[in-house]
Amino acid sequence: MDNMTTVQTEALKEPDEKKTSRLEKKDITKAMWIYYLGAELSNSYERLQSLIFCASMTPVLKKLYDTDEELSKALKRHLVFFNTEGTFGAVIQGIAIMMEEEKANGKDVTDDAITGLKTGLMGPIAGIGDAIIWAALMPILISIFLPFASNGSPMGGLLPLILYPLITIGVSYVLIHQGYTLGKKSVTSLLNGGKMQSIIFSANVIGLTMMGALSASYVKISTPLTFVFSSGNKIVLQDILNLIVPGLLPLLAVFLIYFYLKKRGPRYNLILGTIVVVSVAAAFLGIL
Image 1 (cartoon, rainbow, N blue to C red):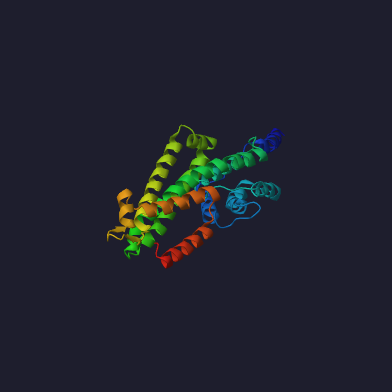
Image 2: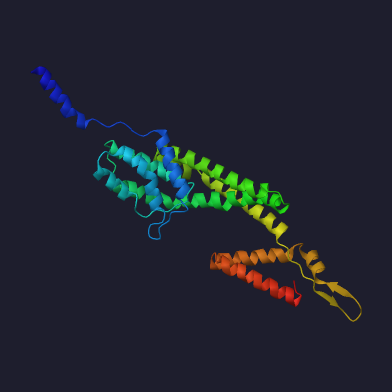
């Protein structure tokens, strides 16, 4: 009788016991790969990256939740609007996985807390990612290997396509595991202390320096205009411009495009079309 009572007591205690973690490092890495490969491809007009984010979380959620009802609720949580930079967004993914695991283990983590954290972080993380990945890393890689391409070396085209994925995959891998391990502290350490601002500033300076060097090297504009006076003296306009500022016309062209982008936004087709029309007209008139 006593043995039966003991067994019944143990059986009653089992549901109240905390679940242990069922996630392994490979599960988190798999989620990172799914999100990385589809972050810039699978966008919904209504919810942007929510589809690929939910897809990346699906293998993790299937391991965490036992019932179809729990899994369904978890999937719906990650189908709300979400959009951030694809590489640095891995840190949000890591934190979301950590919160889902805590929720599955019986911790007091609400649906709104998970959704609110994603919504609150996606803007700041996008700002960091865009500044480092798109405004600094891409221009630097292009500027380094563009001379190889212009000289006919295939390395100029192949190496950026190899190095860019390797760098961004490495960053995503570190950030998702950092986010999972440290949780909210990982984002706090990323944003606070001024270190990230220094990194962004330095990366932007390097990127702008590279773009300036590219503009000076590859934007070629000169004028053939020559003025001949009755006395027989001849003035070549390009020589005068070179005395004022060497490369003045290319510099003016770059700044005109820059100010247009800043004032009107990235209307690239209009800018390219205008450059073609102005170039043809100026060449026809003999101005440039």
